[in-house]
Image (cartoon, rainbow, N blue to C red; front, side, top):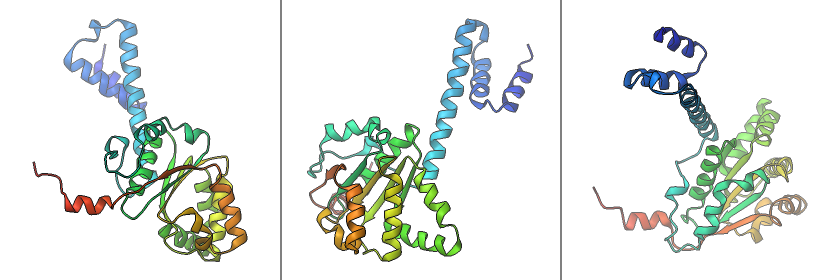
Length: 249
């Protein structure tokens, strides 16, 4: 058996997981110590894990999260009305499969963006394509795309995404172009794909932020009635971290 030739063929076939596993196996013990079934299972598992890791890395890069966040880092002891059991139930991402909308609301610094990105990270880990946008940057981007002729391509990209995160919604009032873009995005996703909206603006004031009563009614009717709600309370976590920094190692 020509081990080097086998490794070269695995590399040529782009079976990098199998290649690394087989190389490690040859360096640590002889394949003959395994049955044929065990050897095949070992190599297949290694390739599977490698591809899953690469897929997750691609999804995380495409998502363009603002910061790294995951479920293991969520603080449930901050006195901000975050129910641990209810939040952890979201880890299976069944809400993604159902195409649900989630509204995460709360005051400045309460951790809305972190929770939204933790949910997005979990979606990536389970293989769901995710996109993160700060609303203060998304709508100017869409205006630019409209001027450059790439608007429909960008809108279609958003529509095809399993999970869309709209962060900091409502900090700036929407103009005509922006509210029409928002309606198009929400309409494309309604009952088809999952959307997470984080905001410090109460839903009752969304009509004022959106501006046009008719469009506001159409947008809110597609978001609010069936949305999952996470309402955070308490002091700013950023302020608390500054006041009580973690001890130095």
